[in-house]
Length: 375
View 1 (cartoon, rainbow, N blue to C red):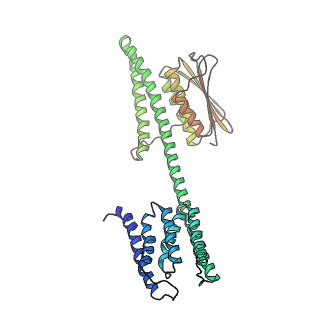
View 2 (tube, rainbow, N blue to C red):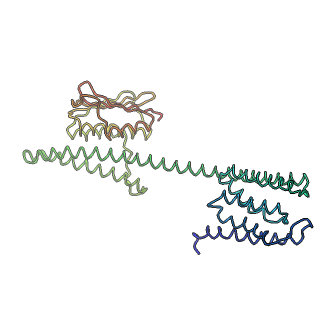
View 3 (cartoon, rainbow, N blue to C red):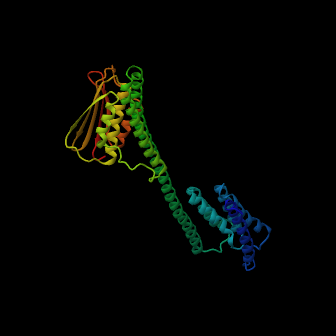
């Protein structure tokens, strides 16, 4: 028998075992009954079996099963059958309901059985129990409810902890997917844009000035090689295969000159201006700053009718400010934000910063990102 069948086996075995214990125990108790107790008969066996066999449906119908055990146990007691294991199914049903969170139903069942037992015996004139026994039974019922509540609280804590863990895993996975998507977009968009521009130049020069097409083809080769290296690095992270991932530093502002030179080969003149004291930055901030500049220049190459762009970096006491302007004249109003600008803003927001896009006085695009140094 496979382990998959064990839950069903346990579900069947519990009622059957309790039925045997209940019937045998009740019949055994009837052999030593007092003169005022009812002798064992078929109805007693029926009441016992009603409570025990009802537990088969405890997992799927906990509340009806609980009230079924209340009814069978109360009738058993009021008919003055000898005390025996008839109370066991009721205890299991109460414990299961309260532990599952059916607290009101569980406590109501406890009160109903206790008050029905005490009140019913008074109405029927059955007075062999004294005050001490009545209080003892009440204490037992309260103790049963409190123990069930302790297990319910423990189950709630475990469930909440598991839910929090799953939410954290989903959030982490979502953030990782977003980060990878941003990296892929920035890497592919930048290098493909350079390749597109250089390929257009090479095609234009191939027939008229074939000797001048070589630099463009060389730039295409270099850009495609860099794109493959960075893509392999990202794929290596996705596969969690550190041995095959390229051993290169994470893209940061130390590669700004390389980025500027590559972009200049696409025909865009790029100027840089550094204000403040340049200093090492946290890895996440350094990468985000580089990617924002890279994406800004990519947008200029792809969309702006510009010949030059200026990158300004301001090292402040509390924040790093990045500004990228181009001399294009294509904007007549506020810039339209595509995936590139959205991705840049997500990078800035993830670090607790901001990113704004505006129109320059001459009609170009200005990107301003403010990244807190403590982000």
